[in-house]
Length: 243
Length: 243
Image 1 (cartoon, rainbow over the protein chains, first blue to last red):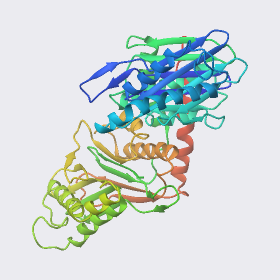
Image 2: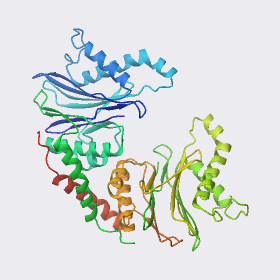
Image 3: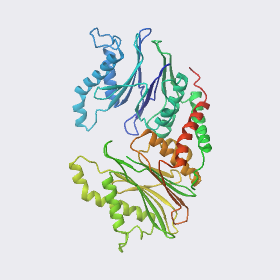
Image 4: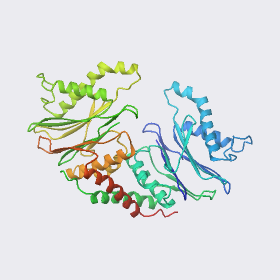
């Protein structure tokens, strides 16, 4: 399983991904689920992937192979808009589907893969897309400025309560990490290390890109103190009157 | 959809169920998902149901029809242990499966129904079971003193952080309601009114059984102040140092 979240705020974007993959519970591995396509000063795109690892790797492979392709509508490095980039990711998924879906179906394996694509190209505003296995996609708006893929439910309540477009990048990153902590705590198939990427509006280059491991003192502090704070908040709530 | 949670604590048991059922998003109804089988002074059993409403109602109908059956292994009012009662619920589900599963399958409908059964019979300790659609079941232990059915993930993090066997009934009820609030906020298919039942160890009768509606001042206060408390807890957390 996987948990990834991406937020599009006035101040920039925050991307967070875990790195655990599993086939059953006895085959657990670490694979990065965050891929960056960057031409500093010109474009900064982040792709987060979930679902069947063979499918998402196959689609990523197509996208990487075509980075230096000269034809139009072919390379993420040449896309003139985020919408065109999202179409390319969708098209890559459709190519993999055309090649693999029938064979997977014979083994009873669903063609499951979702991507989040976010970033900024040239003078266009930042945009954030959720791309489905069928290659179609939706875009985040001011009303819903974030997307999650994978094991999304455990970590959704804190995001729903904290995130709107006006939140600072520091608060958004903190919120994403707390959301990840809630998910890791409740679901074994989501695990460290984490990839955190923070992008500032208009910068057209990666701001911070950090790998957070078991030894990271801030994440350890956050895991410990969030539990305590939550407990304090719980204790401070009024008691049920009818008992 | 549904969200139900039941907790078995040293002090007693807490049961909470929502009441929304839906077939798609345009056919939303209110059905109670909590059923009480009580013989005061002798036994107190609570059944919570999730899944296909036709299946859970059919199983409940069998259980109700047999309450006055004189054969052994037949009536929940005559079960000599909670384990025997859980077997009866499982057997009712298997009867419905034998009658309906093939017909449902022809319409591509999965035979989906889960029950939680908790309570106390005579001098036996309180026991809590999760009963699957196949009629088999598992029992809660001191390590895992609660079960959830339905849309369980949004409300699980707060339970994991607060509930152990030593928690008071008042705190457990408060925690269950906060867990329900997180679920209602994130999932449209879970909704008011709620059924809350609190049972005290050894009492062999329902303690409190309350219906919580939109107008309930405590639940309204809880919904409002939990959001504010969570936000305070969030603000009090240390800022991400690497930004």
